[in-house]
Length: 124
Image (cartoon, rainbow, N blue to C red; front, side, top):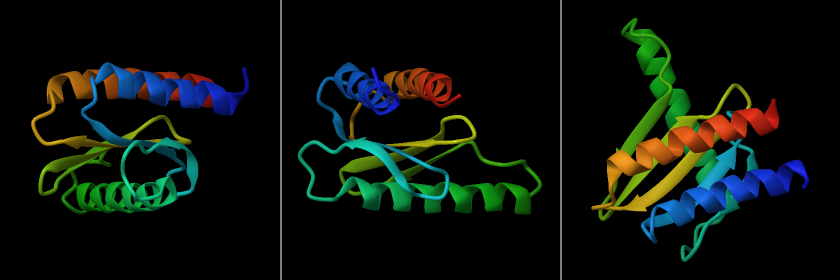
């Protein structure tokens, strides 16, 4: 199995574990370049989610440094009807997930942590 196939499998497992609550799951570089995505029933392209997620996480990291609280490892944005979660997945990737409002956030956080660990293993 190629590296890309392994990463796609990680995203698909994350999506499946949330029982239809995930609108999109994207893996990107910290700079916002798309690695792979599962965007489901949304018209937004994975590369847009990658760029937006990287920008949000970079801004959160700068805010953390500004208030001397350390660099942020994740960020959350509440949208109308959906939640946008961004998590660092090792030094080489970020995980961006959009879920419907009302999704089980505790489960999402557990699954995103597991996925982030697997991504870090694959990317080394």
